[in-house]
Every structure is written in structure tokens, then in C-alpha cells.
Image 1 (spheres, rainbow, N blue to C red):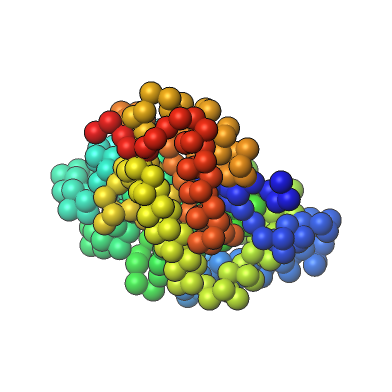
Image 2 (image 1 turned 90 degrees about the vertical axis):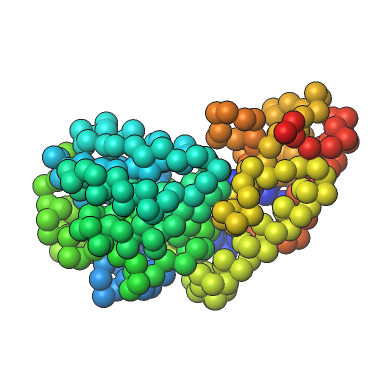
Length: 372
């Protein structure tokens, strides 16, 4: 095969050659040239959410989950109480990490195939005045469902509650405008819809709440307030930065801007999603979600009912044809997931569908139809 396998996952993603080439230079972590790259990345990130007037952005080493954990620890006081509306695996992770850091967490269960209800969030907040913050997963990539950010943000603003948004797989693709939607923190990462490589997260923090965050975190490495203050004073990261990841993200953001920014990226991903669902539908596969709640980020498909289907064999055969799929995250029904994001387009999605059809022939599966 003359190319890397296409990553049809929610991250890491397929990246461009230009992004890969940006990692071929070594940087000094305290060097002025690298500090300039960090500053440029931070400014451009703020532009994506139109947040220069209202927010700061604090980068952090590690996977996106590191930054979610850091945001909760930094924004929520130790006697705070967090409400986590839960319609999937990443919601459950947010509740777990909140509890492990010693913060009180209340989970609001929601069906996995339905978006979170802002009215239900409002009812729970009104019923329990001790809740100080809401953690919302914008796009629950366990299924691919988009949750109503603007509506939940409006509830939190009206009731005076803090809002922490996990926008890991939505940032730079789904529209997020800090001028219209109030959030105290919003978390994303380098290896998602900006199409950089994994290794760093970043958290947008509302300037109005920033000073009150001092001393909240029980972690040295994950104290975003301390990281922000240190960067402001020195221009440097407190601890060894992921230099090559930052350089790759700088190149990826440049390409994001050249493509036309968030609207263009959403249009391409939407086209990818449409090509995928249409093509897989012709093979008999059925998406887990209804179209009206499906975000164009990742699609969960029901597993075929055919007795010859086995995900491990299915995955390995697709990989041999140059496409990396993703296992399902649901506990009640068997599924698998196919990502629509990354440096790919309609052609790659069609090729992926053709590869799945070829795999089905090899395995003796005449239809992808589920046992519903």
C-alpha cells in the first residue's frame, strides 16, 4: 500500500503531509522562536471561537482528557457540586473524573440515542441549589449525538451556574461563538477537528471567572490558573512542552484558515457523513441515531445480524484494505463506529464503503442489516 491507512476514528486523525512535515524540526522549549509559535497558536485558537474579548486559552500537555480533568479541577471549587447530563461514555468519564478529584457530582441520565434536554437540566438545577457547575459534552462521540450547547448555556447563565464544555470532537467543526454563548470553560485538543496530531489539549477560560480559580486545583501539573499566569509572565510553558505537537498544530491551524475556517470544515465533514451513511445504507447498515440528532463527526452503526459477522475479523480485513474503523461504545447493543473527520473527503469515504463491501464478500455477509 502506497499510503498510510485512513483513520476513520474520532482521533487521532489522518493528517496532511504539510502537518506531518512541521514535526521534522526540533525546538528548544524555552527558545524565543518556539514561544512565538505558542503565542500564535493561542491567538488563533481564540479566533476560532471569537473569544479574544472574553476568554483566555491555556494549553496543556497530554490527551484531551487531561485537559477536561484540569478544567474541572481549576474551575470548580473543592466544595463545588457538578451536574453531568449523561447520554454516553464520555459523559460518564466526565462524572468519574469529577468524583475522583473530590468534587461532588450528580449524574442526570439521558437515553443514549437522544440529545440532552436543556429543560431537564434547568429542572434539576432549580431543584438543587447546591449545584454550582454543569459539565456538558457537546458531541458525545460514544454515539455521535450532538447536544444543545446554546440552550444549556442559556439555562446556566439564567440561573447563575458555571458551564464547562467538553468540545473535544466538535471544536473547529460545529459552530461555537463565545460572543453569543456563555461558557466558563471549553475544552478541546490538537488531534481532533483542527486535524493536528495528539498530545496537547487547550482550555478556553472566561476572563470574568479566571481570578477566582486560583488555588482550586489540587494538582501541580494540571493547574490551569498557574499555567496561565506563568505563560503570561514568561511566554513559556511551566513544564516541558510537546514541541513537535505544537508546531504541527500551528501548521494545521494555518491550513484550517486557508480552507475557510469552521464553516468550510463543517461543510466537508457534513459531506463526508452524507457519503458514508448513503453508501453504508446501500449495503444494509443502519445508523444507531436518527438523522436529526446525528452530528457529522462520527457515525455509530448497528452490527450486522449475519452469523458470520465478527468485529475483530471485520476490523482486521478493513485495516488490510487501508481503513481503520473504531469499536462501539454502547453496552446494550453491538455497534461499531466510523469517523467522518480528518484530512479526508468524499473520495476517501466512498473508498471506505467499497472496502467494507469487499470485506463483506470475503466474510460471506450478504447484508449489513441489524437484528432489529
